[in-house]
Amino acid sequence: MLSDRLLAAYDYTLPKTLIAQTPSVPRDHARLLVVKNQEQHSHAIVRNLPDLLQPGDLLILNNTRVIPARLYGYKTGGPPVEVLLLEPQTVTAQADATTRCWLALVKPGKRLKPGAQLVFGEAKDFQEAEVLSATVMAIDPATGGRILQFNVPAGTTLDGWINQLGQMPLPPYITQSEAHPDQYQTVYADRLGAVAAPTAGLHFTPELLQRLEAKGIEQTFVTLHVGVGTFRPVEAETITDHTMHAEWIEVPPETVAKIQQAKAKGGRIIAVGTTVVRSLETAAQSGTLQPFRGKSDLFIYPGYQWHIVDGLLTNFHLPKSSLLMLVSALTGRQRLLDLYQVAIAEQYRFYSFGDAMLILPEAARK
Image 1 (cartoon, rainbow, N blue to C red):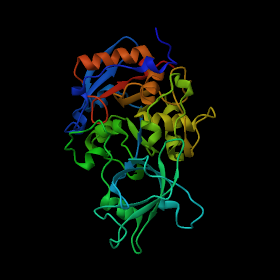
Image 2: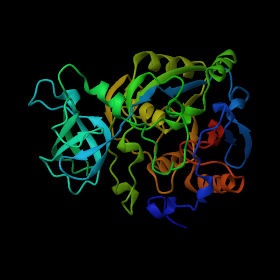
Image 3: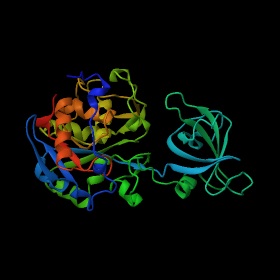
Image 4: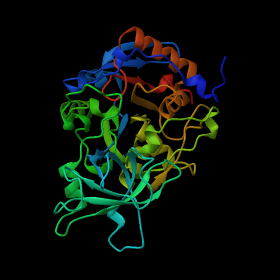
């Protein structure tokens, strides 16, 4: 049997036909694999959540909102380029540069050395009037991305240009989708900053949230702006050699208070998505849950000592991904891989627009 520390231990084979290209409509009609304990599971749909959870349970959701982070343009006098914005960078050399410098993944990247000039939209050269342009300032060694400093025409804002020119950054395995951009946002998204959706939250509708609350299952929010840390592949053969790219999170005081109140009354903390797990567990690394605002590079894999999270609603994740390792830390690796084989046999839909799994607290190894 492979060790939990080996990357190869987190591999599985998925038929391409099970990679969801469009979301469920309505959202809460996605199928749900319910993990009851270490031996039992059942099948439901997300709409059944009020009957699967208990009064007093507290759902924690990630309220990040995806920006249209994929931009297309040209290297000045050269070929087309594709830019995926990852996160804003703080640059002190220029007073107003903080929101104008971004870390970005660029294709083709090898040709874009520091000093290269880019223009976006239909313009192919700086001779075009009033265009958004950027200069490659540096190469980021951690991601292989580029630090871009955007040159914004007078009287305009970079946010305005991104909203005008940018496209929703659907993952590369979604190749045939006709989904509307709003379908890649949660219904409660209100904190701009993510470059990928917290996909477990895509299953919720306002009506489902109301039904949960009526059952005595309250909700509160954290923010994790999903970036390269979440979807960057794990490449180290021994997973403990992998370093997570830090992502910005906020666990506000009101969320901490709600969690403490719920636990004091015997309620269970149910995270909606792996980003919520990372946020809550980061805020409790001292041993006690505290409000937190900043960056986290917490990497959760089997053997992790849990602090806050009792149960988890999550989608089905890519092989050898840090997300698969995080869920394995809650269920046990072999148990999770066995459940994935059940999902494949039952023709569940996988990845961002796919179906979901509910890991109840009785199924968690803690």
